Length: 114
Image (tube, rainbow, N blue to C red; front, side, top):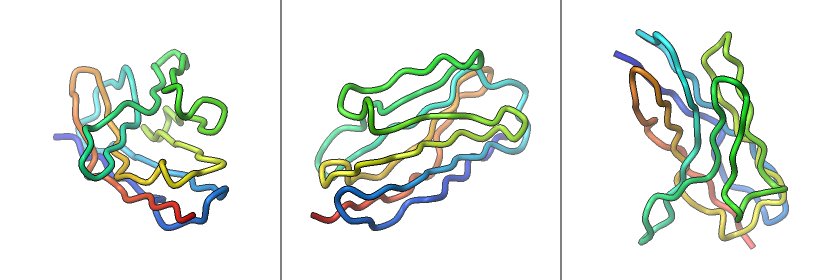
């Protein structure tokens, strides 16, 4: 059993910043990819960014240049630094891990006011 615990969401004004964290614990054998997805009301869940075990990262076009994903393998933790936030970034943000075990976090709300 693997648990994913997210933190760092909240309410911020347009142009502000937030940093999300997601820590995996439990029977973590190996994590190949750690990533972030988001889901806004009425929309499907969409890819935001991910980072592989080797450190290679990918971003959705909508967040390139504003968001940065990073990881601490020693802590099985992935981070998402979000700068220049806009109202359209408002969503529930979910972390996802892939490897022998694939799973999702419970989500953390990010609200950006205009």
